[in-house]
Each structure stands twice: as structure tokens, then as C-alpha cells.
Length: 153
Image 1 (tube, rainbow, N blue to C red):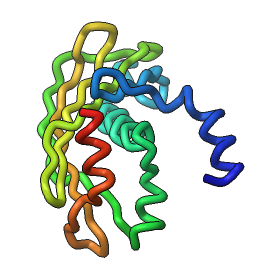
Image 2 (cartoon, one colour):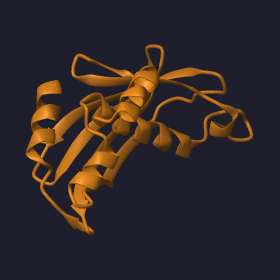
Image 3 (cartoon, rainbow, N blue to C red):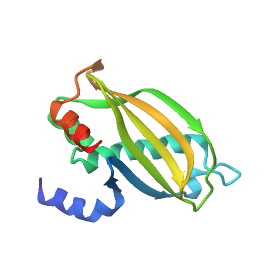
């Protein structure tokens, strides 16, 4: 890892959440830009929050998506399927927690279970299947990543 990246890791470590009991925990605050005209979180904002949770899960197990893409000839993860249940709503200035945990690992895909919580209240639940792709075609998830996610789940 380069010196610049080491500095970024130290500065950004508190921004990336943490692992707990096999799940990644990402706290975040709701800002004006996340809300609709009623000051409630706009439904699409929850999708962005969960995307951040998935990205930070990989970062927490020391896998940066930019590194995967650069070092593995363009490997990327794309959302293949999402089942989402909106159970409650957040408002501006709420502090939310995005909980992300691996649920199932397959050859070229993995399903992640995600929740958006306000305290103990679950506001949104989702199962998100992501596929590993390169050049628009599904490819096997790298064994190192598979092992890392299995150990942490």
C-alpha cells in the first residue's frame, strides 16, 4: 500500500464503519439532500445508503473495489437482483445504521442481507444479489474474496 493510501486509510477509517459479529456496521446521518419535500428520506436514498454499506463491507475486509477493477482486468460487482421492504421512514438529521452481512456466496454472485436501522428500529430490509462481471460477462468471484467474506460471515 502506498504512503498516500496509508494516510487515506487512517483519515478515513472512522468513516468506513466497522465489523461486528460477521456484519459490517456503517453509521450515517440523514442530510437535506437525502430527503423529499416533506423532510422524509426519499426512497431512492435508501438504495444509496445500502450501496455505501456494500462498498464499506468490502473495504472493511481490505478489498477496495477500485483495486479489484484495476488489478483483475476490470472486475466489478453489479446489482443483479434486489428484494426490498420499506418498513418505516427516517427524517432529516436522523442517525441511521446500515447493517450489511453476507448471506450466500455462489460461483459468480453473492447475496447480501442489509438493514437500515434507526436505533433498534428496522426501517428498511433488503436482500441484494450482486454479480461479479468483467467486460459485461459474469465471472467467478475471486477465491481470496470468497474466503475473506466466508470467514467474516
